[in-house]
Length: 370
Image (cartoon, rainbow, N blue to C red; front, side, top):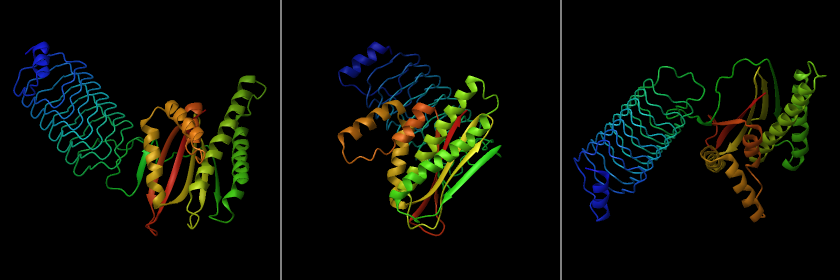
């Protein structure tokens, strides 16, 4: 069947294309909502940027198909063949891919939140930067898959076959853990050349009196670490670098401390802490503070928005919101400034307390290249 014929039939209300030979068909940018292509041959078809929401491709052959930026929300691809298909940046939220063959498929940047990928063959698939939050990956085969910066928060990985190398710092496998990790968070930091740690006792003085202490602590950290960039200080370039690093350390440390103090559980026994680690090519900040369980959902919602959005656009939206809302406290602008102005990498870890079910420990990590 030719593309023109299929589109004409769709225009007059036909949705049934079950078992049709559509190999190499070009339907780029087409709107084909709720079509039935069960057991159809769509090998090497061009469906890039097509709207295929709520469609059915049960046992269809989509191998080598071009599905870049395709909308397949809630579509049924049960037992479909998608080996070596290009699904980069495709939207497959809630899609049924149970038992599908996705071997060596390019799914980079795809949105698969809540998708059913149980028993799917994902060997060698490229899932870098894909969002698999809450996806069902039970008994899926992920051997040799590329999981660079893949979001797997809340994914069900029961009996899944995982890549052999799980030491990568960007890999997030949290389905069976009490810890939840967002963004770029290094769980096992290598030994640092230099480090500094400052702890604050919980609730010893009112929050309003903490603000000046935060600035003093941040400036101390900045001054302390700027001394490691003094060699050749007569050279203008190095002087400028030292000044830039001092300014960046002061700003980031102050923002982390303010956020930690603002949202900390004042009745907790745990200290609020900030640490700074010096490596040859980067600085790593790590703040740790206890929060109430009731605060967790709102904070994680903002983090998810931060990860899923363009930081420049989100910064403008936040500024506009704050300008229109007199009661806004400007929360989040500091983190967005770190992303936009300092090109920093951000990550968070939420850990449940073993002693208090209403308390969560949150760690915020900022990585700054130097």
